[in-house]
Image 1 (cartoon, rainbow, N blue to C red):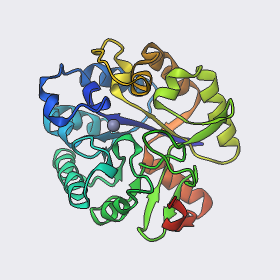
Image 2: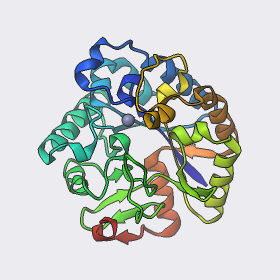
Image 3: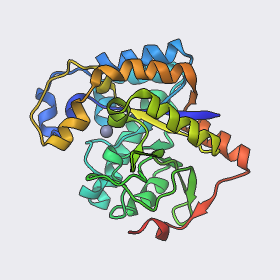
Image 4: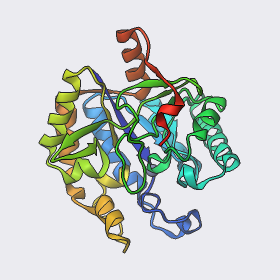
Length: 285
Ligand SMILES: [Zn+2]
């Protein structure tokens, strides 16, 4: 079974919620982490989906072209890394337009996948799905069925489905139960928990016929990026056990089959003869 390998293409200072006005003064390290994961994907012949910020596409055009030339998929991660529920509808539409246009100019083909910063399509920002579809996005990966202090919709199914009203495919974060709690597969959980816990979760889900969505960031492969004081919750999710990202990733790539978001959705549709549809009301809380 094919699982999705996704990278949110951003630098360390974007992952810790620095406002865009501070970005130019931060040390630039995105390539350090990016090329570590990029080489691993080459080594294991895996094609992944890179959700890029529009800002990153503007500053690193050669890097974007190289990713696309290697056969990976490019998707949008918005422009300013602002959470969707903190934007107006017009601001959100503009972020998607600018990012999509910039990426498409660089890679010469349509960008049809999207993930919002911090999985910030929640019950407060479901309006974003309509806008995404109208701007040419076919597959959104912005909803988490795991509820956290920042994001999440508890009633969201944790497999691929179509949202009827917006006519858009949703491929949410994959979730699993461990120690009486629900966890998402990827990011901080991937570093905080022993790798075996993630692998057991992948195995259990695959036995149930559920495709997995794995996500990670370039700065998680760069343990020496600058340390900044922040609230303890954000501090743990950003900095804990960064040295584990690389060996844990090798273990996943050795043991599972991964591909791009679009390839996984296509496989899933072919296997099951379509996708289940749910109404947007199901995601209201
Ligand atoms: Zn992000």
